[in-house]
Image (cartoon, rainbow, N blue to C red; front, top):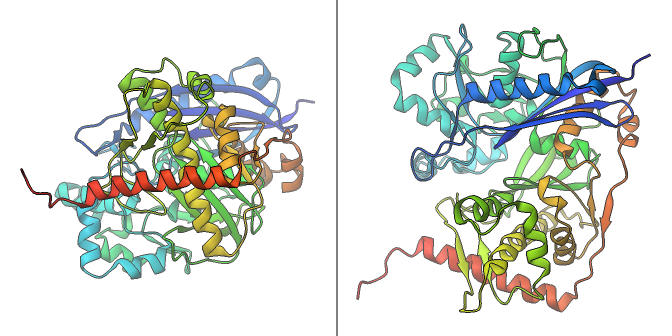
Length: 503
């Protein structure tokens, strides 16, 4: 008898991954492909949603066609996705009517300021658990409907559908089902955490017709069945979650007090708070997470907008790296950072600073600074930003951080993991499967569909994590973090001080 398995689709910011995961926990096959990034203006980031659909379907077919996958019995499909990115499409043709506006996009800074100055910030935060920032989906939709009045008319007539990437893929897979899950809905500025549904009041504030939005379902549930046209096979879609909540699930963090950080394009630290919604005076987010069976729960989240993207920038834009893997030996080649700090605020600063207009800065340069210093500073920045968020999270929740579970592509860098453990002063547990986001989506679908009889069986199928113990002295930790804080303050001062006098 062939072994039961799950197909997981992980649609990320720069590429799409497909994994076929067996009940034993083995990854039977993997396929990946990047897609095009569009930057039409400074601060604007767009994707071609049709290209995302086609690339995602292609890697899914590739993964399913491998000999190992064909020898298994693939019984369910799980989806995880880049969050906050907006897609609007024609309900009849299932074709997008505008490029997807990506979570990194900053074009709605003025709309956020408008809402803030009108006195709506506190109400929006109370209802959604989020802050008023261009990061989230809702103001992207406000902007698009203002810029394109003909789309507003079509939206009000019920001709268009809007959603995050998960909803776009579900519609494309099923031939039009318009559904999303609670974790993705909670990232839109339109979802009320208390009612567990779209808020009429928030729809009014952000000028969004209710007819545009999908039905919200629990992450572990029935989202429809793929028609076979895109994947070449009919599969029930039984698990859907935004990428960070999927990673939280894949790490087994489905109980109060457990935390994980995913290092990808950005980095996202989440602390599961169970059924309790915790308010954060530090500006951290309250968001929907998953319980053990994919039902709604809560988490605190700190979003770091630029993590691995800083290394990618050094590779692609600056040209001082051929591959990201070169960053580890370059960082190890230095005894210290020699006072060089890199604040990678390319698209503003996220938690706990929340300064949308901040921009990147490198400080501490001397004549002796070389490419290895810039590379090390980019890696260190991931660890410092994580420590900033973890410190605020512990203060707001009252829950001490005993360990940090980590995943994502940058965790393959052993030097970074050692440095992260040192800066935090707690052990760092690196998942054996770096693609824990996809693994979490597989778990949600597989537990819902009975591939795993219960969540514990799914958790026990994972290979044990690698543990990095902290080896940095407390004095050194304080010294490095003081330097980082000075660098962040310098970046903020540059952003906020526009009143300098000309000589």
